[in-house]
Length: 301
Image (cartoon, rainbow, N blue to C red; front, side, top):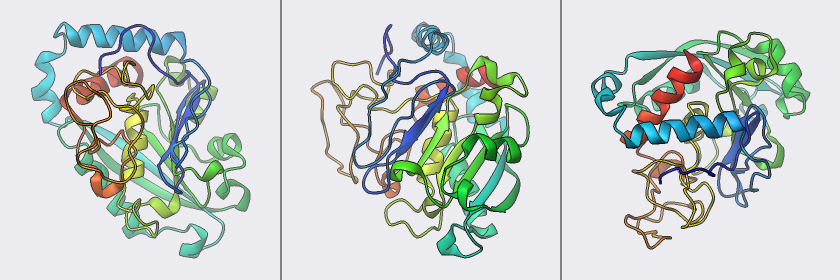
């Protein structure tokens, strides 16, 4: 839904959280906001987005409305931007129950991500996986220390941390792009990336959330996308994107006929930026692809 001046419910330097596995999904972090929770009872973000991010989204929304990016479809469809992905498995021991993942599961996750982002202009390349056995890090207790030790690559590369447990039973959290992230050594540079509950990896044991959808959802945040239900009100601008119908709150399960707002279109329950079950996810919209490319050009290049 279109962004008009006072949209986002995230701040610039804090993560966005995915809902907890107890029923919805997550955390998304803006390098300067409080986390957004993606769980059965997502906690609303209590921090306003940074002025920089609001201005960027407003500019992009206006440019998209004016057709500035209308001719980028051929480049987007060609998937010309390859993103290196550095995986970090942080477990409490070397067993599956302790959060230890196999090389096959990492491969499945990359395949899922590439299928999810097909047609958006992005493809993901496995740049390597490292394994760490550390109870404190695996239990989400020392994010800054862990990331300063493990982070690899540049601001154009994504680091994905699979951990045994996440605070508040979240499935994942990630950080929005910010201009300060390009400064190697900055806090935004080190915190950048996505943290995912290990059991929600593709091929993992967590029922309804084990096809790989959590990582795809979180990477969508890393690319600059908000939740389709952002604001959780039919009168709000939601995610600031025209081709995602208005949505009053996140989705539970996969209810095909859910229509929470009187405006045109059913709720976008198949969109990766909702909180549906993994099996329900099938799409990013064309305008979301445009937004991702706009964010990439502004912040990652």
